[in-house]
Image (cartoon, rainbow, N blue to C red; front, top):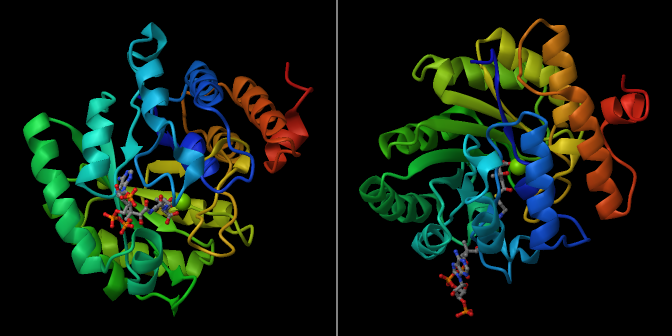
Amino acid sequence: MTDVKLVEVGPRDGLQNEATVLSASTRVELIERLANAGLRHIEAGSFVSPKWVPQMAGSADVLQALLPKKNMANVHLPVLTPNVQGYQLAREAGAREVAIFGAASETFSQKNINCSIAESLQRFEAIQALAHADNVALRGYVSCLVACPYEGDISPAQVIPVVRRLFELGCYEVSLGDTIGRGTPHSVRRVLRALLAEFPAEKLALHLHDTYGMAVANLMTGLELGIRTIDASVGGAGGCPYANGASGNVATEEVVYLLEREGLDTGVNLNALVDTGHWLYQQLGKPVVSRVNQALFGKQG
Ligand code: HMG
Ligand code: MG
């Protein structure tokens, strides 16, 4: 057991907003490289409308290529499913773990998944019934943890009921998304304290975007409050097509560098991760975002 569980979201969140669309086979190679670097939870894609997010088309091919591979036997490969249609497609491709994704902001819910929060929870109920029968693990997301790109500040009172409902639906973990990176330690501490009064830290994950360079500070705040599951994206890739200004997730390189120096075991080989981030940005045809990657690439031992 590692001290911290990392959920690598690069192959999904990292790529869903990129101008360069990577083929399914390149995404398979990315996930294999990440697994070889020691990551054990890797979000493999999204079963959303390819008209809405063309970057995630071919997620079925990605899963089908990976699942039979021996080196994937001990790797969790969750995929995003917004509705029953997505769930069924994910299952046909062999998915054993899916993530439902809601929001604490009405406008963001409408823009992102084309329905209200209440409607989204009804859709998730239908997914839950199927997942329960299929013995498929369910992860939950709540976007707009502290702010919404359309509505501005979001209060803990808006976040808590959505998180509560996701747990009632049987999510084994809820990932809290600072979708546009607007959080600072003060606002992140405020909402986390409110959540931790009701839900155990072991069941909460932090999903931090780094738009304002605050993600590592917010991550430390979460760690101090006992959060031990962190979403991160190799190279610092990421963003949401329906959240203007949402730039990359906190880079996995930054998270591993920080945690290992804080004495927490991540199970990840930083040198191999740096190589993977560099390789990914070669595929994307631009310089890597991660500062740790920039500092370490070519200088690894
Ligand atoms: P809709 O248009 O309301 O759906 O979209 P619909 O049921 O009316 O169907 C319309 C068309 O979409 C039909 O096709 C359906 O077959 C198709 P047509 O007849 O027009 O050819 N369709 C689908 N196709 C494939 N897979 C499906 C699916 N569902 C319907 N699952 C929908 C609703 C949710 C599908 C749409 O709004 C959508 O795909 N949105 C994309 C949302 C998304 O991927 N956002 C980014 C991920 S969330 C995120 O990044 C935040 C996170 O990282 C946390 C954080 O940072 O805060 C998780
Ligand atoms: Mg995200």
